Length: 627
Image (cartoon, rainbow, N blue to C red; front, side, top):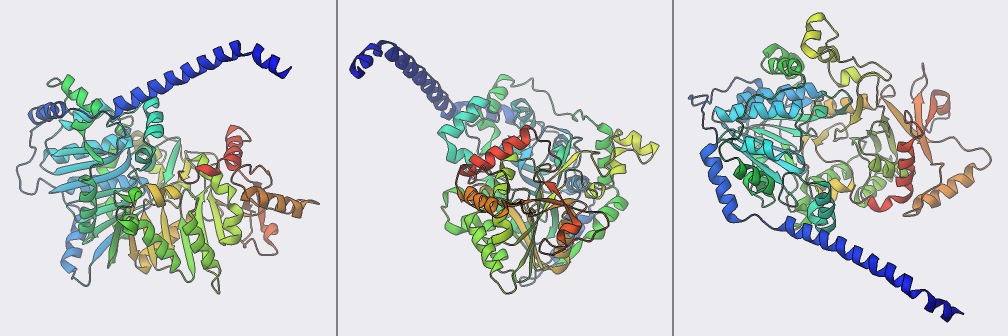
């Protein structure tokens, strides 16, 4: 009977199989054709033609004939000059200014652009076409037109992916030079099919991104930290703003920064605009009739005007920035090498990761860590576990995102999966940022100044955005700052997240400063973000009646599996401090008298977001290495 059945079905099965094979071959052929077409380099002739057009049509105007390039005075440039003059070979000097507020960080950049006399070099991961991104571009074009050499190196995946805009910028000034880093198919813009094909055909190349953030003026004043060039990094987005941090470094450390930038600028992954296929095509298609660069049309021109005014107001700069400046000694600027993912240079190719791990290993009393994404590498986990073995153990305070505040749901899901390991094995005290913290106004600066509700005058200036108040008012806040303080003495501010992607794939940079006063400023800012009025505490959940021990045992087994972590009762949950109570640790017998459990995902509806998070927690362990 089996043989009879087998012989009665082949005609139908064979037809299905043939159609399936043809379909698969067709898709493979299309994908192969796309990959081959995408990988085919531009001809040298097309590049030369585009270069000739740029050299002939670039705006050659000069808005200044003075040796100083008509630079405006800047207190940060004065700080640098004084620090460099005071430096000795064995005793470097620098002045540092912490930038916790996005609006202040944007005004500082504009001030420095206008003060440049020789050069401006910028590295970034994201550059958007919104008000903040276009404002900085406009200021850079003006600087180039007065004779300053301006170079922008932006990662292609999230930056300036408009061929027409880049074609205009290529001709905005002969002093403005732009490269995009690691474009998989040598194009500024990739569609979804190309994006998918790049993952399939060229994953190693595609996966290594330049995550560095560096802003350097005249090789003596630099800004390093977590901010990209988009509205939400400078408190200008009405829906969500990033709580971020960077630092101005004025002095001898600028020379280290210049060497790092040059290394990336001249790397073969840094591709000039005329070598990008879509930009090249636009240049060749419009050799003479390209639209000249003019001031962009801003969505909120009053806010832009107010920020430009603040950038040149000595009183505003003194009150909001200079009053917090500190004179320090050595500032170490660390950066991974472009060959990080290839390990061509051995351990030194991951210089920043190596030094961060050493900072943590050397801790004796306390580590205060702020990271948007908490998915540790095996190496980091080993170090933290060893710190808990010390007598007494090193206290580790972690400020990170909650599900309600994160911008990366899959990463949070994997962090959530390992809460027990973080709390028990590593001794972490985890504080998850609320999306609408009580100190939101302080975190985003004087919000009345931005929202226009403080007075009739400011309302006309800023367009009348709603103020931030405790509760569900104003934009959602998401943590993006990456900082570390060890023993209240040494601090790191940079682009490095505590996740496998920053450790193994992306190139990162940052500054490490051994100075108690500066470390105190960073520590105070992190602890404010982690305070009970602004963050939920992650702690062991109350025992489940009757099946408490059984539930924990099943949960331990479930979490240890690479997949199928489907037990719904996790070891930990989030707690909120009760009114009138003083915070006590989870080990205190009176913990539940002062802390109220608010669930694993507070302020998140039990909807698609929570379902997806549970799904990734259960089945997404294999993604940990690349998230």
